[in-house]
Length: 117
Image (cartoon, rainbow, N blue to C red):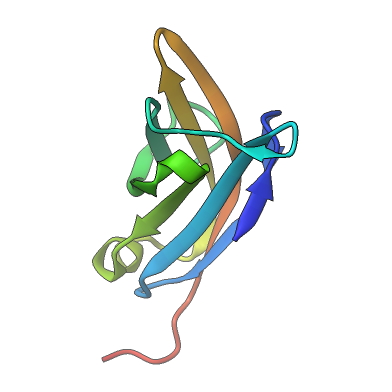
């Protein structure tokens, strides 16, 4: 599990092409878990570090543990299988009320798979 403060953070992610991807993120403020129950989230992978670049994937954001400050990000094996190996960019943005904030992002690296079923 990755612990993050409320300031925008950098977190580089790597996935093997064709594998399922999952990562849990925990958010805290002043050392206490942030209750994310009233927040909505958007996590996307784009070709370049720009909102106008090609959208390659939208991650599923699991909010089952939102009350304890934890969200899970995931992509299916089919989704990662459709991505060419390379370096891309991802960001997680949350919305609470009318406030939208990008809280974490970084490189999203897809490496070529060796085993293939």
